[in-house]
Image (tube, one colour):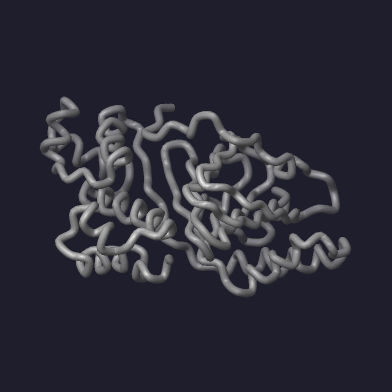
Length: 264
């Protein structure tokens, strides 16, 4: 299957074996990991579902053609057997829950890859679970609290959908490599060797978004990564072609539901 984003080459580490461990009596396993800037795990899938939580910094996840951004105080839910790669554009402290597949449906958890806004309760429970001092009965009780809380969390619009048609992949690649690109669809279509109408149709049918909306989401998610690394709204507005910092802030808030200051 073609991809508009290749998985990052030369990953720093293989996946942890926890995701493959289906030992009885361990419905949920917790793990903490500090990732350096530029870290990437090898692409993989595992039979356990995974909740990867960012406590500070930002993570990026790719699954097939699609990309998700996970800022601090957010998490990404990865169902069982989904091929994916996690990476860290910035240094980040992460907490992970690995959930046995038999518990995923029982707990009413998401059935698709989803970025979630974490709650103070979930963050506190997971911090307790990763400290290594709990007995098995204590871990089980906290695990049920965590699963119940995950089922209550609200999704966050941190997803950039991908495409499958080679013409769409080529067009998307321009903006994935250069989010500041300002050419319109007609110019991109001409370079792509196709018609503007065809390319517009492909964006809608394969991503559910118009070209303008997809490009806007790409810019906003790029800005989100850069905000977590210290860039200002003024700098990002100029880089991404907004008429003013206030226009950038308004677009950011309209897409993600909060101003850039909430992600610093």
